[in-house]
Amino acid sequence: TPAVRLDRITKRFGGDNDTAAAVADLSLDIAPGEFYSLLGPSGCGKTTTLRMIGGFADPTSGSILLAGQDVTRLPPNKRNVNTVFQSYALFDHLSVADNVAFGLKRAGVAREEIRRRVGEMLELVQLTTFADRKPRTLSGGQRQRVALARALVNRPAVLLLDEPLAALDLKLRRQMQIELKQIQREVGITFVFVTHDQDEALTMSDRVAVMNAGRVEHCGTPEDVYEHP
Ligand code: ADP
Ligand code: ADP
Image (cartoon, rainbow, N blue to C red):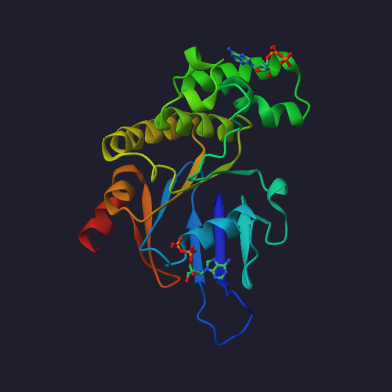
């Protein structure tokens, strides 16, 4: 069973059948544990596709299945999916540990269990010694890793990442690409990664869907895509 299945998804903004569709009759399957990238130029429909998987937008037609279950009309909190946004959206008044713990606290998880899981996550993203710091005292790459830890701590089946490295300078971005890939391997969670950077998609992914004008033009391993760009 695919972790994510999009079955003939179309998204129109405005409802009018004459408007060009942002996403047009798009189908794809993402396997459990896969690092899967949506690659393509600005405006091709990557973010819209990601938002529909996350439940932040509804398709005009078509269906979305997560682990075989139709979630097309379920809200984000019923989907076992988390998102890392480009802006990180960290809470500046909370420590790094409390940022990571936030969702678990709200879900009523016991304090000892929270400490254990937050500790595990901080270790995973190598921020153990920064647990008590405030996000604004960290570097961009470190803040990115806090956002990642916060999104992984409740063990979602699927993690959606929308250009999470776009705000970093090139050197740091290269380093984070490697780290992010290692973390994904370690946790074994399905990652769906949006980028307009071909090198980035080819470096990190198990498979890449190359999008253009709301459609998948080509889908395959980085080697396939490199040979048929
Ligand atoms: P990408 O992520 O590949 O840059 P998007 O998914 O953001 O592309 O956008 C795809 C198309 O849908 C674009 O033409 C964009 O202008 C349009 N679009 C995206 N969001 C909205 C919206 N909320 N309202 C109207 N049009 C939108
Ligand atoms: P509270 O703030 O609820 O009184 P604590 O002081 O024990 O409880 O911890 C604050 C929150 O942050 C808890 O959810 C805790 O699990 C987590 N936390 C704080 N510091 C660390 C740390 N160094 N490693 C792991 N988790 C931590």
